[in-house]
Length: 226
Ligand code: Z5A
Image 1 (spheres, rainbow, N blue to C red):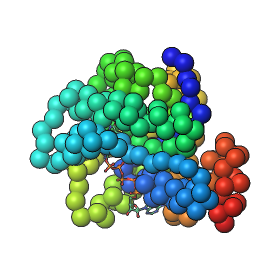
Image 2 (image 1 turned 180 degrees about the vertical axis):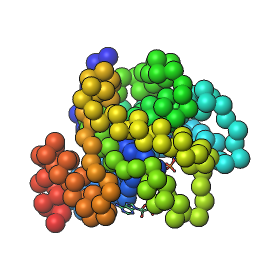
Image 3 (image 1 turned 135 degrees about the vertical axis):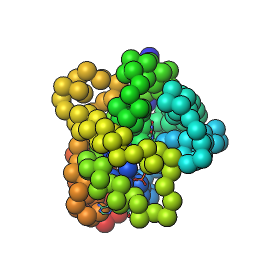
């Protein structure tokens, strides 16, 4: 399909507790202080329908089969892409997104063992061909990430999927950083792996470098905000 986008889609990915929300908030703060128009969304969610789906998907009391789970993530995504992401990008806005379809590839294909071809086809329908300008993949072991996330008072349904599930997810994310995998999955766009094991300031420096080297126009914005 033709791509009329003029904005930038910057996606954060990684295991639970990798620091995606923390880094997204920091980037968001830099751009806000510099007066650069931007939007931030998270998956699942970001629309009225998506927020209802999010509540269902994360509720520890929900019983959801693997295929239904994958399709619910897709429904939330389709709504977000058509109602929010595409219009914002076509208006020239920078869009930050906390998780996108790499998460489905990690959690539903590797984690739940669904067929890759089925999930990829459904995802093509959900994204309608939207490719991120860059995905910042925060790499961290599932163990460390879960320990960080456990500091929260509650755990959601997916967090409760067991250690083996989360190890499969971690290994999948690791595979996504390889050139071979990326060459076979062009729909994912460029993926930049960033070591998320340091403290939040160290990770922020890596994010800053990755974003400003890819989008030099933002270096000025960061400079103006400093
Ligand atoms: N999911 C899926 O299965 N399929 C899909 O297609 C999609 C998602 C899109 C969404 O839950 C769940 O849905 C998620 C994947 C699945 N489940 N799992 N498991 P969510 O949106 O509620 O959760 P999340 O995306 O995993 O976010 P998170 O747990 O909040 O992780 P995070 O955003 O990467 O981390 P954080 O909130 O920034 O930080 C977590 C804690 O660590 C917090 O206390 C921070 O202060 C601390 N932190 C952050 N950075 C650091 C550093 N560098 N050092 C030490 N401590 C840190």
